[in-house]
Length: 66
Image (tube, rainbow, N blue to C red; front, side, top):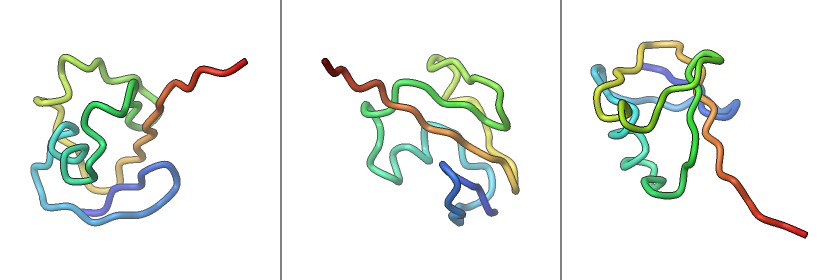
């Protein structure tokens, strides 16, 4: 299935959860927030949230600065 992540198209197997996707991309623990099709997905449901073909995923990390 095709998922668009921060504007970049990537292929994943069917029934991939949000948490599995983050692990495959080595982003587990680095992403602070995720939105699928402009809807925020709470971190405690990432392991249950199955992505669908064509989903648009935005992954956010908070960076401190001064």
